[in-house]
Image (cartoon, rainbow, N blue to C red; front, side, top):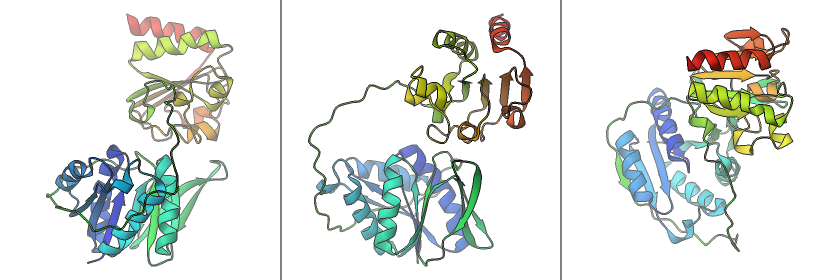
Length: 314
């Protein structure tokens, strides 16, 4: 039986891909396989098999140390051949964005990356992704017999575990990576994960100066939320890159997003459009953010935010 093959280097994302992959496989009459690669792959494979993948191909081949994309793409190509995969679904992480076209080239397949929707329409997988800098949404169908999709994290919900599958150690022929790592230097980053945050307060250029970010920080603390920002605030260097939300930052899916001084340009809103509830605070009643918000407060953030913090504290 031909398969759908799923893979991602981020465990939380591969569980999403397995959950939705089982739906696709059931409707298309295909099997569902997953790949676990690199150090600790067999331990990961047991979890993926218990979650519903019918077969999990696990390899800890020495060449996979460091998960260099040239070696990983070769491994996925060989596994895809063994599974007779007609569709490969990857997580569109930083590594996944580079893996997808490499795997597609090896398979002679069409490829779509950064999909934020992947759905079956009349028996055909249709992907949606932002185009023209986020100004529009493109709906794309791959016409080649084998298809490769890279789907953004948090696009799918994680379902309940399914029946336990089989863990297989594939026979792979892998050469060491052509890329030599000379040294590694850790980048100083904040311990923040906006992708997983349940509540977020986002600040925009309506905040006049860096010192005034204390207003956003105070509101975030009162709500038990993470603090995020627009690209403009990040470009100023007022907050770290890890806190930027939007097309060139984090794609979030919180229960609550509070936009403070955020105008609502598309570059930012593509990162918050999946929020369950959006509250906007802006003194400009015509600000685009109000078209997206569930609730809006038209007022000066320097007056509104302190009042909200005081009310929340009491």
